[in-house]
Length: 309
Image 1 (cartoon, rainbow, N blue to C red):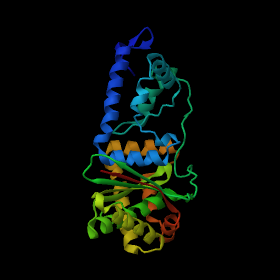
Image 2 (cartoon, rainbow, N blue to C red; image 1 turned 90 degrees about the horizontal axis):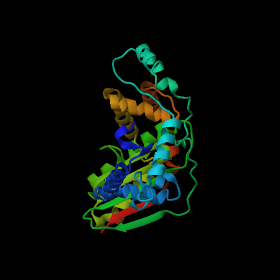
Image 3 (cartoon, rainbow, N blue to C red; image 1 turned 30 degrees about the horizontal axis):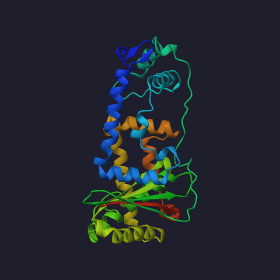
Image 4 (cartoon, one colour; image 1 turned 60 degrees about the vertical axis):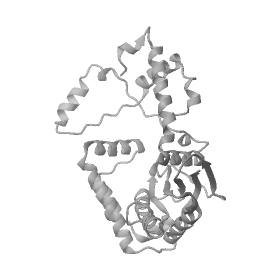
């Protein structure tokens, strides 16, 4: 909760607001310094331009001045009074003792029951439609290395989609055994980096490559070939096993750090899923070649974004 020194006559102080506006402005301005993240954000913005997901998480400089002390105070009070509160604990403690402390806390006891009020995004909520044309966007900037980002839609909607997508993504571009790393970076030597990631909340896979600007067409051609090759089943059982081993090792590591484990369960709370780490590993282990092919053939390229000079 904000310090009492930040309040005056029931409102947040203007000095506080002005300082935070400047801090936020610096954060927004600095996003251009990380070209990898800037390119990914730009691709997402073009994919989801009419949706909240397409808005940069810190907002835009032109909107900062619209924030005034009355609106900020009203929003803060609404947040404190109405937002659902979840308490996550990790460490060596007795559960009963913690529950007793929370139940008898004078501030917590005054709180009224709350219901979460947010848009639920997970692999079951996204209704992707087949797209006629691929969006292609090129942005020029003073850069020495090109940043190629491809946003892929997963059109499939099935019960085990998350685990299927994780295995597919590991085969495609997550890790040194992946097709992107081996074919775009190692064999063709076209990329400084070549990888992909799965975004469960929007049922997307994002391919990210750092390339020499003159290699754009060559890199794009080979990346598309890898996507098509998986659709055609041109991957081995060893590829599948390597992908599963890689993912399961990452899942097992969740328990090695308290922060990581808490984030894992926060994510489940937000997305309304309930699965233990052991169940998660088992689900990954049980993914079949047929499921990977089914998902691969539901993939479409939504947007190709290239940051160049």
